[in-house]
Image (cartoon, rainbow, N blue to C red; front, side, top):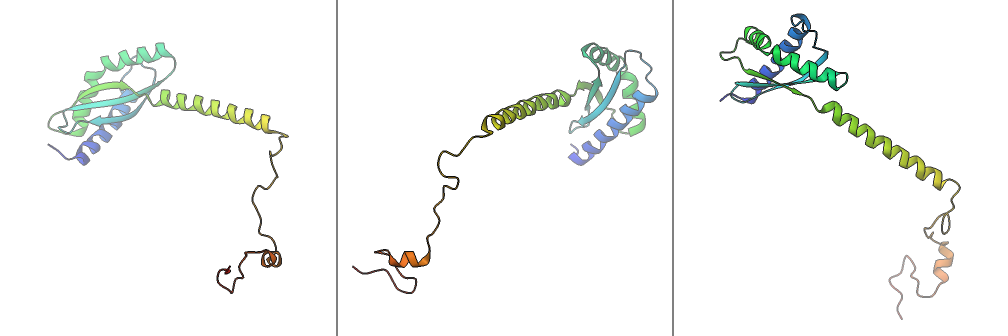
Length: 160
């Protein structure tokens, strides 16, 4: 088994090699605007998962997935040539869920902003149910000393 640092370095190198190879050598017309977002390698360095995103609609995503699958052999041989590892890892291409997750979060934030605006609109011109300042304020020190059962600061508790 290898250490995780070596697997991470190999994954980073695979990400760069695949991205450069897609840009320079793969001339498949089905391949759309593909971005390689991440690569992960198993601990035994035998399998690599490459995450990608495609700018466009579902049809372009499906066409790019097919183009990546057909170019898998060329990409694997290029990874083997440029990394110099004893066993070239097999490549698996997985569409990255990050853009979908980001879109979901943006939708939730838009809903929260709309609710905040609604609450702000309802509360405009509203008055407090009680006084504006609901907290008690200490009265003057002279008034405290005159009340029965109060204590002076210099004396102990009042004796009855």
